[in-house]
Image (cartoon, rainbow, N blue to C red):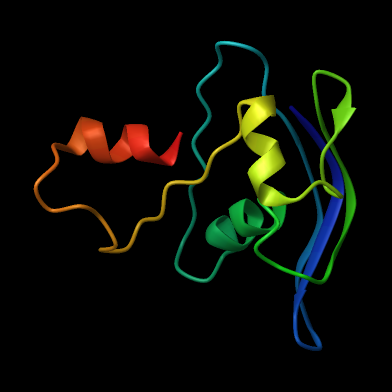
Length: 100
């Protein structure tokens, strides 16, 4: 996956400014930073949970920022929320598999 110059807004607040990154096949990448640094906003922007964003993002050469969130599944992109909206009777692994 390659992301170039990703920008995102919450209403009129420009909260993500010019982010670029690349994740190669079989690579594990961690977004780290203090609270309110933009980690969740980055993921929400890539998964179409924010309506106002701009930039470029592709997976294996397929541009996906304009695709609906449910079509990103076919590009092996998924979002697993960090909050408590999990299924309590499932294991941690089973809950993570639901995200995919």
